[in-house]
Image (cartoon, rainbow, N blue to C red; front, side, top):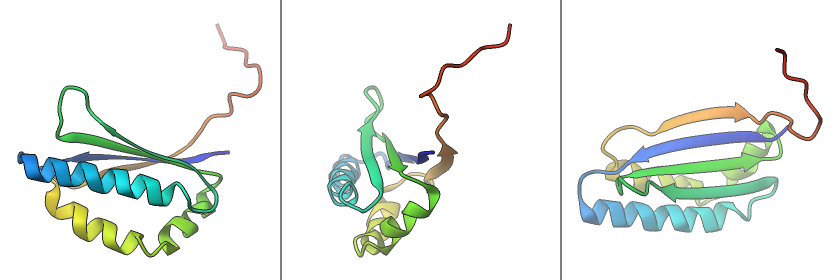
Length: 107
């Protein structure tokens, strides 16, 4: 099963903070997408609220995070990002449901 982490970030009400956060997230996606056992590492910005960002990290399995955490870039991420945020990151962990097989929905 695919192990997924979804992180919501909310930037300070400052154009420079928003621009810096956006650039760092794009850079992080480009770096982390190359990690072993990483399926995808997407970053998104809300289409109505430019302060709201979301990261979706998809890994082959939960243990795949070790490659992400061993990446030297990881040590630079939080120290750069946290000062740009209005509130703490909201991080949630999921196991994706298996949609590859037919399913019978109970009535």
